[in-house]
Image (cartoon, rainbow, N blue to C red; front, side):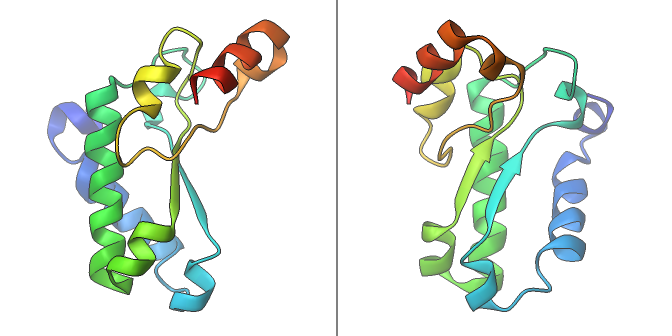
Length: 120
């Protein structure tokens, strides 16, 4: 949450992409699936709002477009990995730049996981 509060969350994600993934060729990058999870959500049960998730996913997609072009940006899957639950999955997955979810703890409960799958 500190990065968001300080207003540096975009630059942190940009730096991570540049150092971690933007060294790939376009052909290699087309095979990538990106899972975004805010650092403050890891292991906490907290989740970004659907608006926050969309905002960051769009930012990531825009960075991909600048680096690899619109076609590549449109084809790369960007999934949300921050505490998707049956209660928030449909709203998060409804955002245009959120291509699905990377389900963690909720996948351990059959009913929760099935509800999340139904939300997609």
